[in-house]
Image 1 (cartoon, rainbow, N blue to C red):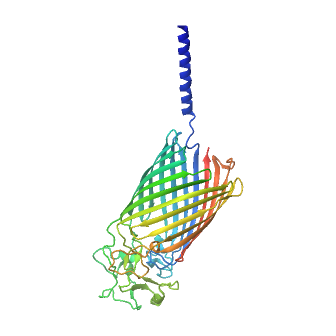
Image 2 (tube, rainbow, N blue to C red):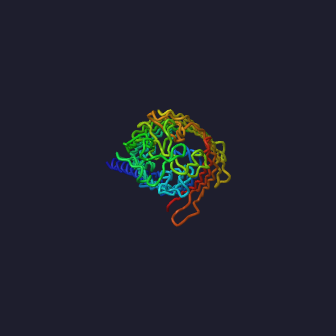
Image 3 (tube, rainbow, N blue to C red):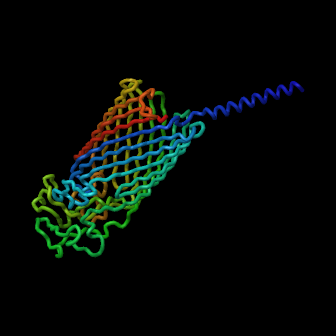
Length: 464
């Protein structure tokens, strides 16, 4: 009997020890994110070109944009992470300013920036993401909500995703879905606002004490038979735009040196997919202008500083669009100093656009702390079915746009970056310990003449 008691005691001790070990594993389970992390990013973008969409495909595309972004990742416990992403973009655009060319101090012209309220604007964005990892870290569930707003557009988004890791975490499959419910606060070109309603009087409003000229530079009778008017009225009858997307990706570590991933997306958009700010001009309708008649013959040239072509209509596009991008990445580790990163994407949609994107980066480690990252990105696309340039559309068409983002073009972007890694997070500001710092400069050019410069600075801090 005594022997049985001893055996039972040993069994209970063993069982207690086993439970203690299990509890110990739970207590000391590795956290998905050890500490709070703060990313601060700021980018400066400037561009210039000659095909402004607000003025119908001709005019200055000069634009500058400054965007600071804060991303805060908070570990809620061992398994859950909350991420808050907030951004503010402030921009100044010569093209957008010409929603109201009458505001220009130098005379109305697509080549001269107006001084009206539409010249400058800001865009704000906030998104909140929550992710949960399973105990073995082989399953990750996520969900997010987002909100963004600018003076003519508001967007609300919802999304969810799931990732599954296999093969000792060498293989990953992920699935994501997103819904965006957007709405326009329409900002129409100023001359078209005069035609909002059934009664139109070209002697009041923006046209009060303003002469309207024909193609020959002669002043017309505003009450006569031959007078300017927009092609369509009402101009816009829908202010909603909704987007639905589904993404699937597969990633595989091939060996110690190589890994690749492939992805495919399906995006469906519905609603008002045109931009009401963008003018369109038809070659089969008479032209009417405001300003200095002497500049009419040079309208499409920068020497025109005093005359503006009154719009025939705004951009009109189908109320649905299906987008399908498919692509992949391949990374190869040459040695401890050099890595090859490649990316390719094919895109197609039912508006007639097909595009190819290829980018290559070659990070090279200078020291344990510094890495230089040269890169190049090449892009080519075909023309949308509904695109044509200034005065190339026909008024009998159902859809039309002179936005050169829908034109056929090739573009190249060259970049150089420098990464600094503070291995022991020695540098700190209060409770913020620096983890890494990234600097990047990119030069972008299209064969249409558009050029841009982008400077980006990013740093990641660990919060004590």
